[in-house]
Image (cartoon, one colour):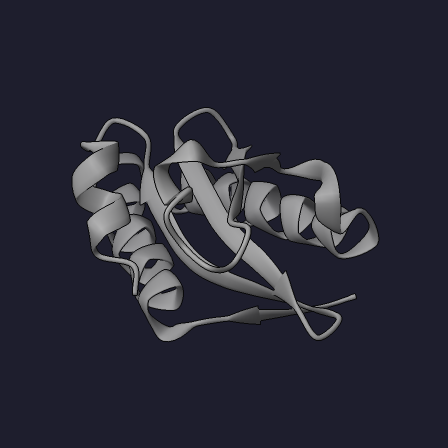
Length: 103
């Protein structure tokens, strides 16, 4: 199944990568990208592997989420045989505030 990163999710990854490079260096960035790519690859083969996320229970789509690495959450839904990745955030942030940013 094909994965499409929506603009806010892409921007979040860019922001997280900038933070990782600044504080931890390029080796940490490589490990982060490897974890993200591995998760997205698994997700494309098993789209329902993420748990239904209760933060989005009021939405028309069924939002699912999966933890990437130890600290990041990837939020997505499936529509027309495509995985729409709508958010990506650090789990140490306020989840309710993060969820409100998603349209």
